[in-house]
Length: 205
Image (cartoon, rainbow, N blue to C red):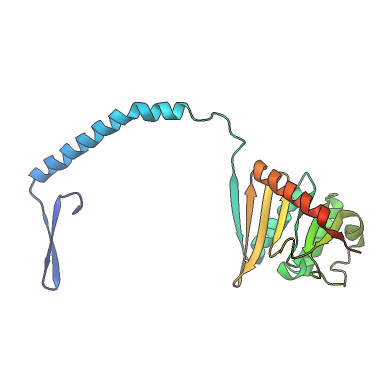
């Protein structure tokens, strides 16, 4: 009300007071609103013309989803099971540690049952020599791994690319969080980058 000019603010010693402004101030306020309205009406034709010339077709809506904590990570990983294409990406974290081995094995079982396939790039010496899963069918038929030198690419978070989705999760300063971006063009570009790096990767095993 002070900003609008209908109330006056008085500041005294250790006190602040307010009182109504003269009624004539309302006329001044109304007059200013009339001026603003005329300016808007004047600009309206240009605004309408700009809107008419905006592109009428887009590549589709972009959706972004955020995930937090272990439960969010489980949801992000479970979403990859709905992929209609191969899931590719970069590996850094351990599913067994991030979401628990029981849930991780459930994911791998689902990949086998749903006939899902994935390829993953990791930095050299990142994975352990011991098998990370007891699901031998998953390892032999549904999952492929290659190593890439750190001087080519430093991998510091897990990434998943499939269909029109580009997703990743990261553990930073004690916080586990993930982001899932649904955009066909972004997913397409990221898939092309992955394929270039995959060719430079070294087969494991």
